[in-house]
Image 1 (tube, rainbow over the protein chains, first blue to last red):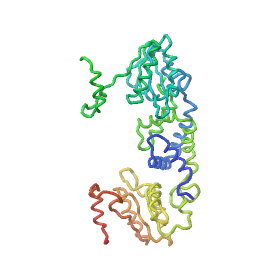
Image 2 (cartoon, chains in turn red, purple; image 1 turned 90 degrees about the vertical axis):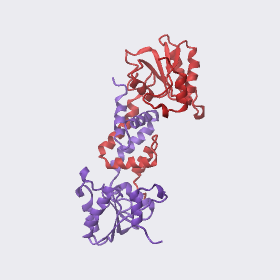
Image 3 (cartoon, rainbow over the protein chains, first blue to last red; image 1 turned 135 degrees about the horizontal axis):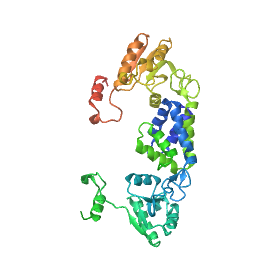
Length: 199
Length: 199
């Protein structure tokens, strides 16, 4: 007979599949759920079980939606001439938080990474090219992450979209707001110099 | 119309109720669940929903059980003359991992903490006194945490159980195995000196 009932072992295993949650944390979370009232644990369980039934990718931009189109694509005040290309749905949330962008989005679903077997066909690049080729779109802002994969993806998209006759731009690199120059890494400082502007 | 569908907001809220999971991590986990296949999210959901139906506290020691008694209480090879008192179910797992203890347990459900409104009546102390008063029990080993609340609880239990005519002992304090003396805190070193033994 195992020390801990199988229902708990199963919960520990499933918690441990989440990113950033190791075996120790998974065990701590499972035992925490045991101590909390059943309603709370069941509410989290229900939210997880309903997630994929109630939510799907937006048919146009692949952000998340509870209908056919997401909140942004179905907002008539957004400017359809501007497309912002991001890797993940969470990046849309980050850009929206800035309040700086009033166009539409395109969620690629990741970045090019040949080492992980992610080529152009694994991302929603064909869909992006189709959208960029319409007369409506004037500028595509590439907002992939400022890391190796994100830069490679940005470069690749720049090449591909040049043919579509749209302006392709990339988010600026430089010092993050509120940061300390003293603690910035060399590449960030080098890019901040390269991108310096007249005051 | 909110940016993110309500099903996701709900999941973020519920993840955020777990200990050690802040709003940012909760959001990251929820968006991760969106990207994984529906089966995985549903498996975690089902494990959470079934938890409280399939598992309850052991009727004797309050460790976790899927029947009336836990795996330890229903093992005839365990010595019923020895009781180890711990704060939480997870502490039983830690003591079992050491392989050092062959008796039975008693899970208090916390430690005395007047500041948080946890007095003797909020813990399973009356149940412990009843168990300790039986002829069968010879020694009660108090294994509450070596922090302020755990020490206060150990002291309180020592006083209460003296009346029951059993030997009451406390786990040794000292240097943790594999640690560096150089990095040990003053209290740990002081206790290691106080508890030194002949070689």
